[in-house]
Length: 335
Length: 253
Image 1 (tube, rainbow over the protein chains, first blue to last red):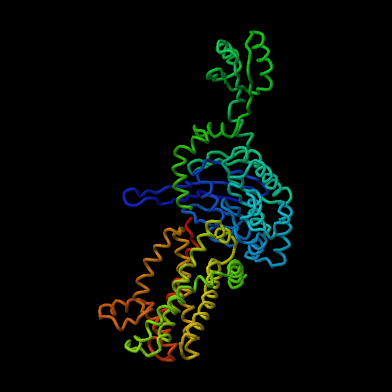
Image 2: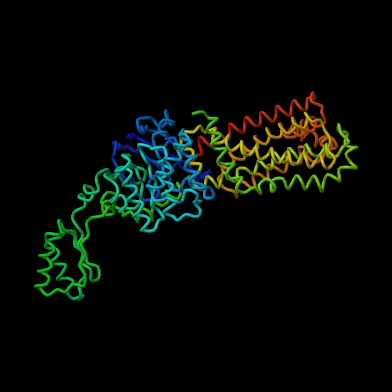
């Protein structure tokens, strides 16, 4: 459905002596099969949106090739546009226009007859729980309703491939969970291939069959969430010891089954393969030697751990550090 | 699907939003109407000494105000586009297969339609104030005004998508508009000025447009002014539409 080879996008920034070239996307190869839901994950400024804009024909690649829905993005942009739906980060409707009018006009720009656009629009309003909001202006909608309206705009022409750019950014948890259901429905009810960018790990985890991780303009991993997590050695076990005097003893015991045990205050942490099988024995042992615990936490590896393993930085550090710099530059250009 | 149908879809969407707030017609026309009412009387005793084809102050002034309306009104069209861009509307339209020129032309149709309503109001008011002119000439004058208005609206849209900021656009328009206003002979004919000023104004394409509309109103269609002015209006409209379409195609974001 999507095949990209060596995609590059460079921006020029600064003037005079400060002028430099920023390679926002630096040789991206990616493949997405029909019917797949792929999560495109990376810190802010990693090149997610820029890659997406090249794949959706909004931005011409500086170098490289991409075929989307069977058409070349540079040579056959009109055919690409006809086949894809795009839900951008910023929205798609004017705040002071009626929602239904916006949807119908949008459908008509895809060549639909008015009656078809109205019928399909009303169907989608119902499916995305927007019934009764046809004559409402987006400025009078909640954040969740507005995002769902953006999804309707992206689906009006029944595309076989849907791009979603940071679909749940800025939504409250409830609206977010609700939108997730609808995104899952895109394939289930609609048979669409879905390509979504996010910088939320749980979102990629919950929605995507496969995850592509991008960092500093390059794809650093492509696999299922489970396989990616399997690259991280074991589950994280975190013991909070009741008495500071017993910390060393607890660390010793954990060390017998875990690697790289760390102590921080009264917390003792280590990574354990298949924690579920060995932790009960550990607890009995600790109990037997008289170590009392205030709390115990076992965490499966998160995509954050995966990112850390792959790049040596956590996602949060990547956003705060150099990733952010490139991000600022990018946002400056795209805004 | 034809670009014409797409233009109409874009136009209908724009006009629907405009009609929801009909104050635009009045706000846009306030400035020329005030010139007509408060500046026109000052010209009455002077117009005879201008050495122009008419001795009617309003037949002289209304064509200038028409062109001014066409330029200034249309130049502000781009501000609305920045708002639409900020809300993602432009990008949503660009991701559809619609022709890039239709996205611009649909908006120009709105601007020209708006300008037409305002032009008719201005001419009617001028007539009440005492303007007289050839009917065919008035029609031709309005047509030239609409062409130059389309040119300015296209340029304004292009500028809007290039700068993407009202804060940048407002001073740019001011910097461009002041010399245009002063060197086009909109309020007073350039012929009463010193030679250097006349030579300078010869470089201003809008001056020929003002002269053309003025000659048309006076009923002299065969003059070289009408020809030059019309050609300038058409050339500027073509250039600006090309520029505007290019920004919709590229919109380097």
